[in-house]
Length: 256
Figure 1 (cartoon, rainbow, N blue to C red):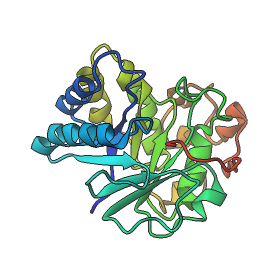
Figure 2: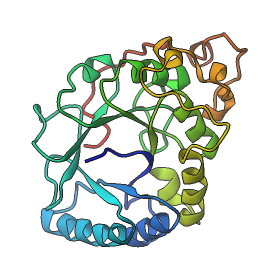
Figure 3: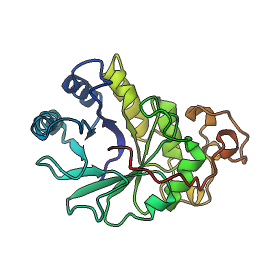
C-alpha cells in the first residue's frame, strides 16, 4: 500500500469548532484524501464507531484512514508513537512518529514517518525547539522512508517550504480543526501539495537535500516557515538556532 502524500488531516475533536465528522467531511470535500484518527482517550467501542464513520466519508474518494496506535480498528493502516511498539505490527501500512536521528535509526519495516515539530505548535506547547526548514531537510536526508512534516504548519507557504525541504507531504491538525472553512483551507493546502509548476520539491536522496541545502537556496523564502529571511547560501539554521542535523531529545511520539 502506498503511504500518505500531500496533506494529511490529523484529528482532535477537542480543538474542532464543530462535530468531528463535519470537519472531516468538509476537509474531504476540499481535497483531503488521508486522515489520521487520534482520539485515543475514547473507549475502544466509541473510537471504532468513529473510525467506521470516517472511513465512510473517505470511501467515495478512495481515501485512507490512518489510526494512531497499534490497534487498526478493523482497518489496515496505523501510525505508531516513537516509543513503540517495536517491531511494528505486520500491517499493509505503518507509520511512525520521529523527532531526531536516534528515532529514525530505529525504523525497520515502517512505510513512512512524521518528523516534528517543524514550527512552534499551539497544539503542543513546550514540546521543544522547532526544527525549522534546515532541521527538517537534514532529517529528511537521513530518513530511510518518506517523510511527512508536522507541527505548527497551517499555510500554503509553509506547505511549500516543507515540500522544498524534501517532505512528501504535511500533516495538519489545529489549523484545520479550528478553521471556519475547513473545506476552503483544505483546498488551498492541497493545491500547493499537488506540486504546482514552479514549486521545487526535493525528494529524499536529491543532491540539495543530501547536502542539507536550506529552503532559501531552493527558492522558498524562510519567512514561509515563519522565521527571518536569510541570504542565499546562509543556512536557515542561523535564524532558528537549529542545525541541519538537529538531534532532538527522544520522546514518546507526537501521537500518544
